[in-house]
Image 1: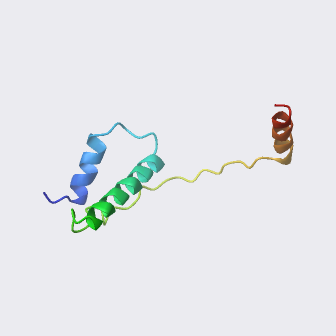
Image 2: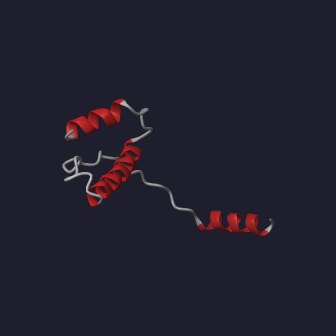
Image 3: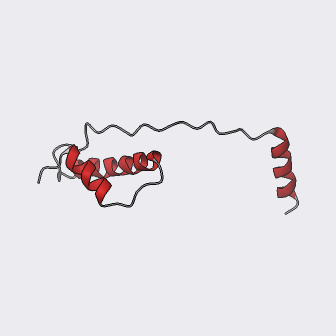
Length: 81
């Protein structure tokens, strides 16, 4: 059976519960990519079926940095343990 990108994408989205976000899907695709690369190394596949598959676009969220005051509270709480 020859896997194609459209087959892989369709089976991936149909056979799995909906992901919480696109970043989760991208991480899962990285894991799958590594498994398929191992299959190539072991001689089970000749090429990557997901070779032309691009990651989903993810909106980058700006996460607030921890302030010096918050660090002080954290260190104080940790010291009292």
